[in-house]
Length: 89
Image (cartoon, rainbow, N blue to C red; front, side, top):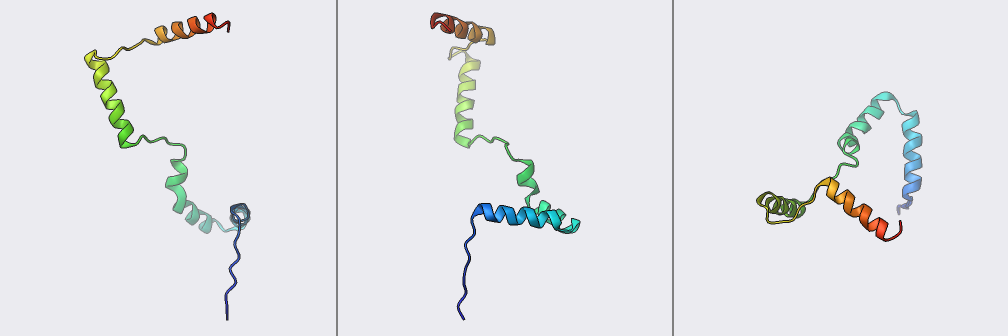
C-alpha cells in the first residue's frame, strides 16, 4: 500500500492551527503555548553578533581614549539642520 503525501502551504497550515486552537481545550492550548513561549516572548528582541559586539567595543575604546572624533547630540542636530537648510529642505 502506497502512501499519499499532501503538501500544504504555510497559509493553509496557519488556518488549520488557528481553527484548532480556537476550539481546543484549555489544557492543550496551554501545552502548545509552553512549547513556543520563549520564542513568543522574545519576538522582536534584537541581538548583536559577536563580530558586531567586537566592533562596538573597539569604537567605544577609541572614543574613551580620545582617538576618535565624537559629536554631542546638539552638534549632530545642528549639522543636520545646516545640511537641510543648504539643500533647501
